[in-house]
Image (cartoon, rainbow, N blue to C red):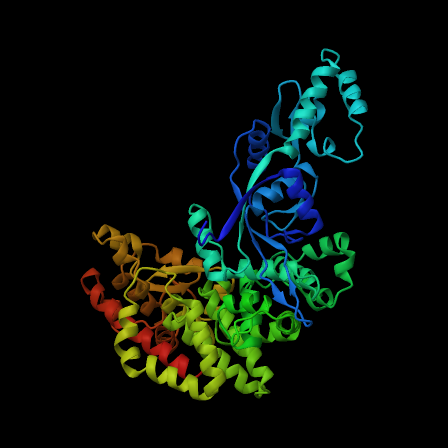
Length: 598
């Protein structure tokens, strides 16, 4: 057919399994967490047993590459849609372990009732019931003797006949002969076209990302250690979330334990900081962009395929060089000193808790910047200042909240060309002018979303400045955030609700402060006019109502730290709109002072 960009064939499941175990079709050895439930695996097997269609698999053969002698090398197939189905079959039929969403290696055991020809997820009751085969993997084992197996089954189930059981188990084993559709995309297709095809064919699925393609490209290239590199990326991401996974690696992967990657990531086994838990996509983006000064992962896929951007040809030398550089950069990403110093810088900007970050891509680019500046031998003190300021600016302006990849690509190219000092000054002058601080930022603070990046930066400013919690004499905002303290409504929520205000009005972030729970509880639903009057009495030798502040000067400092407008002790619901307006301006100015001193 004219311009047909794919071929369609029917392949037996047994053939597909053979291709996968031999490496003809690439399924990464260490999968990202297997997201199917055991029930869904059972349903897949039941559909295959009954001859129902189970959808198509989509594979893309690696582009042909030009070897040094001028000949062409045909690449392996990459399975880009159907990995969950194939993994389900490998797990249930071949008895292989999978990594679940909790990063644990588990077996999925599917039971079969040969008399009723019924599938079920195995459980303790089934394992004790002799009428069930509790794990179908034993039926598909290469060394099984069906005669002995059937005889043993009938011995434990005297009401059955060998002939009926034998036929039932043969039907089960014939699943391997079932045909499944395989759409193979032409090798000359570029990554963007393949992505478009995937989305159109599998419109209800999750669109394939460039990172997915990159990870598959890495996994299939054993010539340059891609299989080990892919495993290293997955292992690091698992370990950053679940340190106990370290023991699983030592137990189950003696070969990887010998690699330089394993020793480089071993420090994670005792690391519980969750400020930056990178995904494989984050890790790839940071390592690629820091090393290649490019921000689009489609360029990484092209380079790993040997693409010469000038001649538009594929060359083996480019593949070799790209794998070498990516491997080097992944090791730099994993380095304990780099990783911990970077996190120390982010925390020194006041972002001490994962809840304050908001933008993973802001973290990613800040780490890119850190690695880049270290590579340029920029003094440590300057690196800290640039990274702190860039991260705060990125969160404050939502720099990577839209077309993140385009922004990352543009920024890295400009920094590489102009240098960080010139480019950052241009960004700050252009986007953080007086108009931003005096007008745009106060307007942006007019929101009820506690997840607002501007509120996150305000809290970071309080942490950085060592502010005390609202009406606290001794407890800092940092300590309160790290111990998951309350967000208190200055004008109490219940009070405003009773005055008829909507959720969007009483939950304004300009009405929020970080407070100790006991202070929050003591205030209850009192209006500001009441409880602030009590606070002033407390500072004039009166009864202690809230916290331990008993000095007027100290109280005024606490108000200043928390941007409390003057005259708060006289305010009722009628002054609430004016209060919000004034406090937004005070919060904006605090953020400005904080940013300028980073």
